[in-house]
Each structure stands twice: as C-alpha cells, then as structure tokens.
Image (tube, rainbow, N blue to C red; front, top):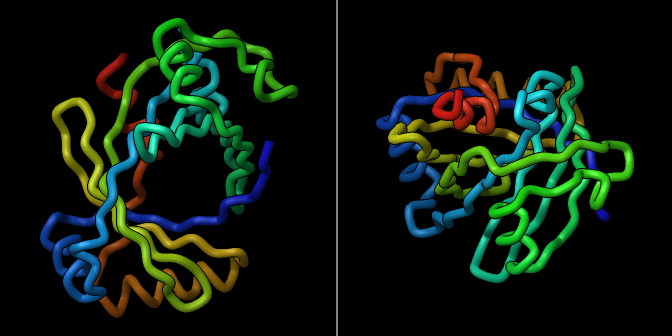
Length: 183
C-alpha cells in the first residue's frame, strides 16, 4: 500500500478556457483517458464523511483502488494496485474495504463511473492538470494545481487564475459530481 497527502487547488472552467489553456501549454496531443469507478455504501455513508473510494483505470491492465479522505489542507490517500480481474470482480460484486484499507470496514458497491480526459504539465513548484470530465451525459472542465506546500501553492494558484482571467468557482469533487446521477 502506498500513502500520500495530496494538496490540490481547483476550479471549474468553461470549455473555451480549457481549449485556450490546452493550446497555450501545447498539450493538445498529450490527453489521456482514465476512468474513475466510484464505490460507496448503499446509503452513501463514505461520501457523507467526505471519503472517496474509487478504482482508477489508466489502461486495460493498470488498476488502482484508492481511499481518499479530505482535510482542511489536503487529502490523505491510500492506494493499492490491483489486477484487472480483481477490478472487474469488485465492480460486479462489491467488496469489503478492510480487505485493502485496515482502518475502514464497510461493504461497498459500484455506483458510477466518470471518464476523465486529462493532461498535466509541470508548473512552477507543482503540477498543472486540465480535465475534461464526462459522466451521466454531462461534460465539464476544470483546472487543478497539485503541490507539496499548501501556502505556496495557494499563492501560485491565485496568480495563475489572475494571469489567465479565470474566475474562481468552487467545484465539487469528481465523485460528488458523478454521484448526482445515482441519487
């Protein structure tokens, strides 16, 4: 199991701004697809606790189950690589979280998938991500900046938004947006 703290800043952006940033950073040919398969209990208890549980599929052979819990200055993530067969079984039949994450004991089932068409590029002291997300017949766009230092990252992110004439619009987590079609 791999654990890390993820510090990220993000905002929803309109499609034209997304396309403008893709062009500005010359990332049009670097887009890759990853699919997030989200899980929760039947009563969405994890989501209510701001816990995200997903299997991320980056290719036909690369699957990773992740448990992500929110905090004021970042998210604590635990990851476990799994086989394609494990992933299919978990999506089809659900699973017990304790089989992968010892501090959680819930039975969860697959709820919804979100297709994320993502590009990334180094930017100052972190990594800039541009995402086109498709779920439930909806497409939205966001810019995300991931860093190691919260205070420095916040300053850089605000400067980036100002430089590129982007209004900060709070956005829900990808899982919450995808869950809207399941409730």
